[in-house]
Image (cartoon, rainbow, N blue to C red):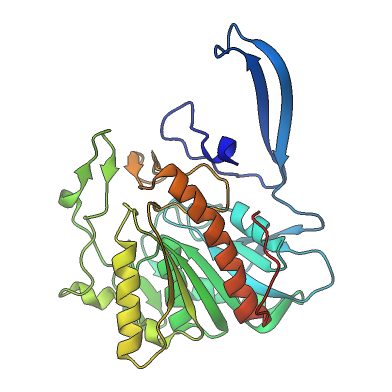
Length: 344
């Protein structure tokens, strides 16, 4: 698959993502007689397509109450173990991970929480009641196997999932992909409680040799006063946690945060979380064979940001992490200790 994960954008700082999962990725391959595209004679041509909706997978837009999402259901009568899937601070509704995961027997809700339709345009104040509404939607859905669901969160979506697992009922298993253990970017409200955001010092950013913004050191230390108030009480979480950690993450210190989570859980007499460390792996861990995104123009900041990762190591990590996520959810949501895994 090296031809695919080694792809690079013709226009710098573009990230390859799939916005419309109802159409396949189409990759055209050409074999040339020589190395010059303009002058080389074409010896052969083929088109490879990657579907994002597997055989029988159903896509259902969700506009129930305040919830703005898309539900993906596997083929068959069900009910199926349910997962809520959250992405990060780029906002919008990202469906590609949920659609692929549904092909492995899960009912997956891709949930937007800002920058989509009538949702807030910016992350100012977050209300956990919105996410509670999404959990209740899943638990009441006839195709979702109760009495609980799993959570899958990347980046900002990771700390939201951690807050959901710590405060909401009906959560059994949580996977966190390069997530922080403190509430970040915006204050989080739930009933009469407010968790302040960790905050950052923009003066601590650095610029890479390529002129990219490196944000890793701007975030405040959640162990220091007064920032520790932003720490999420993850010891209250019901069910196990899995941290997927890119050791070359330059968005923030994911490895440090996972270590803090383990220490905090053990200090409260809880089992330590499962942590999988991936050397040479950056912030944006996607499903297998997506070209690693080492840098891109951030959807909100509007400037090129460096995310880290060495392409080959990062690509291998994406394959393994995808399998680890499936195994974790099958075990804790479906009661299956051994499952047949797929690399897609």
